[in-house]
Image (cartoon, rainbow, N blue to C red; front, side, top):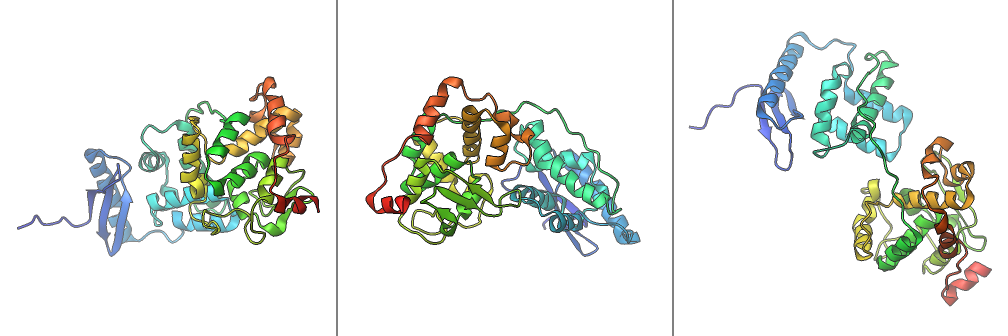
Length: 357
């Protein structure tokens, strides 16, 4: 006869997850949440505390003025309308905490458990700050302003040292040459304009002016349109050589538009991007967003003007672009200009008229 299952919650192991989970129901409320640890003894301690709190709430009822983390997240998203990165992080946190966790119950210990459950083993303090502490604190500060909880105070951890990766013109040329045919125009556009990947994939032909070398990125991260003036000849050539002239400019291998799936961290072109780096023998840990870092580094190397870089790149402050100063050696500037901003690339005959009209 199989052992009788105890009432309440039980600690279970989930395939593919390092942390142990709680599963069960109390007073008709189903519970499925991470304990934040892979150690059975600590998971059982968490179960006992969590189970007691749930039974107490079922017996006495939760105070009427208490609000859940789910309510706070929904209110924050509606009110602040953050970007895709913040939305993705909050979705992970919401799945971890559960929508019924009360905002005034989220303290440092729960933040630590969330980091252990969500992040990869051996994560760095800056990663915990970016992925866990900052988004949770933003939601709780929103809730605190409405009297739902106290103002949050979490440990920020050691800041660590961040490195801004970028590629040389030769490395970029090698990557583009090694990329699949349908990706080459997109990569050329990213490196030649500093556009964010989502902005580039949203670009429509109606917003491209090839004869005058311009393009308009609509509804950028900062909530405004961004006009790209004086597109580099390589970018103009890459666009002019595309066969279609309606709808999205950049398309997948078989001509289908990109979807919204996995917009973060270059998810839509992840395989093609990784393949191009591998074939080009580039080992730097760069993602599609590093094309923007590369463009910004080149921009400052040529112009030595942080304010111009801020405006041209659509950053919200000069402070955000200071990290791009002094990354590129002086001796690389002529190569940047020759390969990307002065060098005219051959355009197929049908496209010449589009540029010269």
